[in-house]
Length: 182
Ligand code: INI
Image (cartoon, rainbow, N blue to C red; front, side):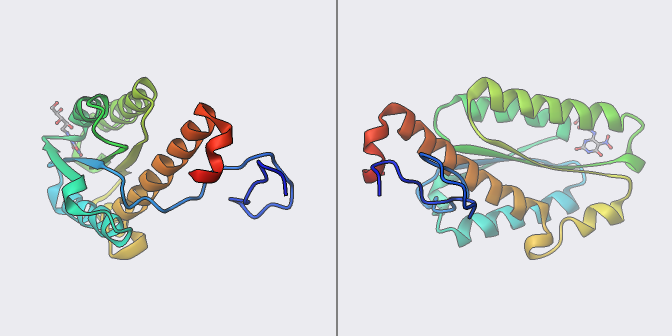
């Protein structure tokens, strides 16, 4: 076994010098949620799903912050404030944009997605996209149910995995010889 022999994160037979990903440790992560009040009866369920995932992974509530904004269009601005603070390992954005509810669906949903992508890249931080974009309320409710059928739950898991992966890669890039201790 070499110094850098990988533990496979994906189960592939192919050997790599080092492989990262699929790590869901994460109980010391600090995570911010930004959620939009528009269609709140749906977004509340996404927030509960996300909180459930974070709690199941042993993240204490004093490591979690929740911020509400009026609508999905406002999510990127707050996500940027939180991401640039340096106080969080990941930001989770939750919202619901429903086509039937707005003639400017494409603008709200599109700018929200574009803005959140930009926040992630500008800050080098995972920003996960838990914004439902559906044609109907029924479709949104289907994606905001209990357990893993809940988009909030799913994107919270993604936030944990991405934060862990970025941390592991960062440590490796700082000093590859330290990997054994990390
Ligand atoms: N915001 C949403 O989060 N979901 C929607 O479905 C929606 N509709 O239907 O218009 C919506 N609009 C508000 C928007 O996000 C902003 O809050 C508003 O335009 C003020 O900037």
